[in-house]
Length: 612
Ligand code: AGP
Image 1 (tube, rainbow, N blue to C red):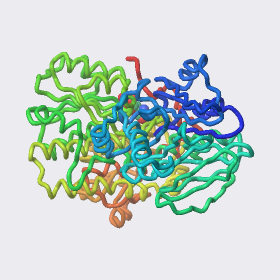
Image 2: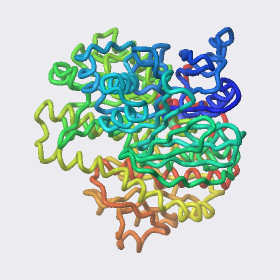
Image 3: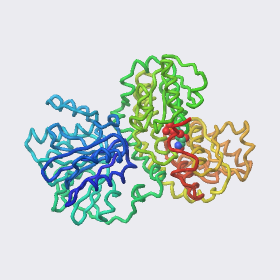
Image 4: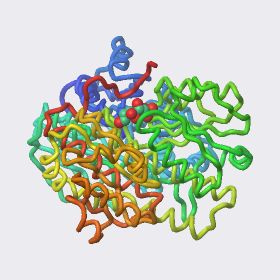
């Protein structure tokens, strides 16, 4: 998720662009840049690795005059965060500048075709391919910029919001969107473009939300024009903004955590995008290291916190699908346990931030023993991503809330795809099973959307349990880690003590805790352990405990036993933690809110534990 800003009007664009980038930094902050067309028709592009303030320092002695400009703050997906990969990207002839939010899935194919026509590239990004394609089309067919953009977009597969300026098309910005947001602000003497309304709200409350498949032609002193990719005129629906900047940064949600919980249908879509082709899973980290995954006799997963919970699920997925023995270690324990690491071991390091000190140290130890290290990270170019031999990014966008939500579901989804990719390679899973599981993975966004409909019911339910002092979370099989994760969510944002346990372990001690003051969340989807989990519920009820059960829709048996049921859609057991986690995230969120806790920045916690 990146941030785009554009300005065309009677004043200098630079101050508006930079202020807008600051407003969008929550969308991505690993590099930033501006491209400005001045009155002499010169195109100046300035970009720098780091935050917007780094760009401002870089620009302080530069010529930034000019009343037309586009700008970008990056969340890297293709290509390390550095000056060259930063946006805006400029065509080879130096005439066209473009900023992009999204991913171009077929950029390799397009890049090869352009190279065959003599194009050369400076960056590793998919975005540069698009601006070079626009130039190539414009030059080879002698067509106007708008036609070249339309033709280029017709060749692109993926998601994008773009803004383009061209030295040879003065006083004009072309903007377009498909699956990534773009807002146009209509001021009295200027027009603004942005990924959301936060850069616009200071100047105008009149906005147009561009729709998928639309192109906006913004010309100085002229009315806005909007057309479809098929060159048909589109109606322009001018809305009036009513939200504050703070609300806008959170997408209208009261907290980043709730926004990120509700983003999960889209973030899982982004996570999957381009990785399930036909009936097969395609992960470059596996296909580029086939010998490693064919030759390994063991996988060690190292992680912390929520990422460690995802690792426990990854263990079951990889063992079940790829038939490789897996051990899961807390990175902090692993690094000091004088572990036995064999050279043919594969170590998988899972980390949202990519900066967790213990996980980084575990990676270094593994590499000292000659193991191949594979990263499952969210932040492109992070320390862990750079320390590993290969990996798969989860592509869920910046996770601002300290309590991990969309990163967890992204990690589990990537681990499921990783297990399938390795299983395909080793021949341990037949094509029918791959097709069925791949199809189930693609269906996850819809099932998550369905689970999110529980929000109001959970908000009401949270009022009953706001002031309890302890919670027990129980689950079996794939959902024992879900119980651990649900308990962690609750304790870290509401400060209520919560423990996750394998349900069958109840009789080995925890059942002594059960009484009317101790509510138990029991994860009981319709799977092979269903009968056994029913007896766990009966054990709790028999001792006066209250039960909140997460069940598959229509489970009348548990509905007759539990005090509250939260119904989710049918989903294969191995993928159920992705869906089960949604009501558990919402329960933790609403209880914490009712307790007046700061859910985005809980006490004593940091988003990334970069120290021991
Ligand atoms: C989870 O909600 C917490 N924020 C914490 O447990 C986190 O998962 C842990 O610190 C690991 O962080 P990482 O994934 O960035 O390495």
